[in-house]
Length: 160
Image (cartoon, rainbow, N blue to C red; front, side, top):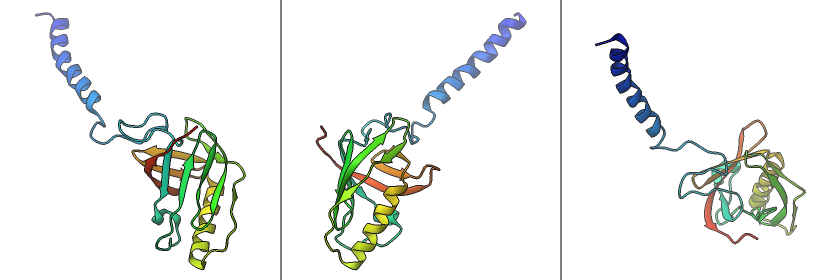
């Protein structure tokens, strides 16, 4: 048997093992993806999904019964900031950058604890520079990548 043939016989099983290992790498737990390429069965974009804030991500207590939400269309965001409603334009890219335009909102009086939570939420939205979607979780981060707010998808919404 020639040296070249023997080397080929030794290398073929090694290459086959590498191909099998590479094809199954990460299949048990998908890594976070860019917003446009999410795993099967998970949310793939901001628009068309109702998002509810994970209270612990706010950094201040969210009073019982108070919900903070974000609903994105192709160009606008709206939702509840705890006590009042808000809305405004946003821009996002498939690479994960996110910027909110001027957000307007109602100005009804709120109980003290809800008002504190609302102020914290609005302040965090002003710092957002990026987003990621992993499964049914939306994370809004600042431009350096520090997580500011985390939401869970609660339902699909109609988006124009």
